[in-house]
Length: 606
Image (tube, rainbow, N blue to C red; front, side, top):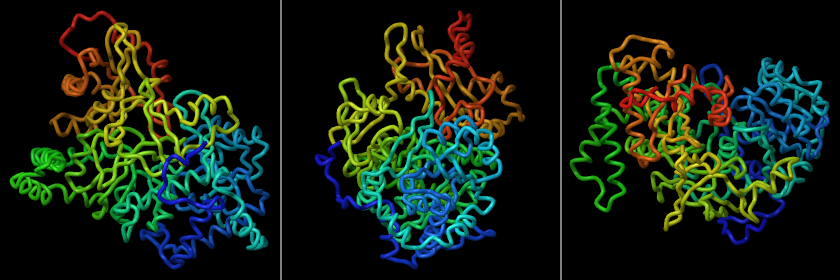
């Protein structure tokens, strides 16, 4: 593929690879803090020199275990410091790290280990090891399974004690920009996951060009970021490399239950998250305010933040009176919200789905600018991202250097550039189907405005065609409904049906706060799904969501399911995208009830 027509800020020599990223940091500041690691209630610093030495020691262990250049090394773990260490140890050994979600089933593990021919696998826990043991006899290429909680890094270090430094130095120079750096298996909303082969060019060139393109975030002095999204996902993996390239101090938080505490203790300057995290932070803050009798103040402050942010995009800017209100709201509400993120977080990068204009303006209004971006596993995460100096809320921003975007006649977003993967592992047919000449078919629908800002409008394969022939993009309605405190997931249906309907699940975390806020006694999900007040609130939420679309596209009926969609029950991927085809299949009877003759023409719910 020829990327020469798409300009880069920084061109790299062909001999560059991901080991160069660490080498550059080591030359520029060997005693700078590379990362901070939680130990006994404190964050202990690890210097660049210390990290590099640990990487070399672990890489020697991989060599001693028989890992050769180009071999695959699996990592199955939550997001933690050891993952980043093992990632760079595999690259230092000339190997190809292959991430596996720690929530993966034995069948999924077997497929990835077999397809990628993983030779050595490092898992986080005994529980992960037990999952692997179920299929170990079906993956003969996997010679060794090490457990992080059982000192896997120490065992590697001991095993490699006799491997000479020169061997690691030799292996670090083997890969070029065009060699495979990692194979990341797509979450698989339908069918068997495909392994996207991402190259050293994809990571090194993209991060090298992103840092100077968004300097306010990634090149600011004293930069710190806390990774809490799964490192098995390309988004967190890209930021792992980006942080090292930019000089950001890196930290990891493996458990969402301790995230608030970790944010407060580590105090990042920027974070990355998916839209659901921002929705939950907002809903939690609203419920906390209600529990403290300050709901009216919170809602006034939230509305003020949104008005103030919108005014920033006008020629006149916020009025004097609005600015006064904003300062009062900051003292009463916004400062407390920023404190929950550590107190010095000024930017967040959001990806994995649309954030929505309301939340985008709310967060900018409270002092946290969310830079929404767009990308896929096959594009090493970002293709576009909003910048502090070029921000258009409601879009996913301008293209990054070296990243090309065009819109096909049918509205599909096509991508080309140094960030696009080289193909699907062992799957030439899928690779051929994924490209239109030089351009990668994303499957997403969107539009470009006159200044180049990209707006996502839906998924090509998810377009619903009603019996009347109306094309409906479900994402618009689904995203708006999920923003409600009561709603966890929403699946819009209506293909070949007379009107649009929806399946809704209640949020088990949001329900107690909502009930308390409205003076109601605690109740179970099953009780809540038939409660008149809950249903009335959902009716209102659906009515508000319908205002974003035409009458023909609006939700006419919805039903509340008796369980949520989760990773554990198989309806969500590890990156929190629901498996639409599986939901439609398993909940076919509930969908049929939406279209059964009804005597109640006023209520939206059935």
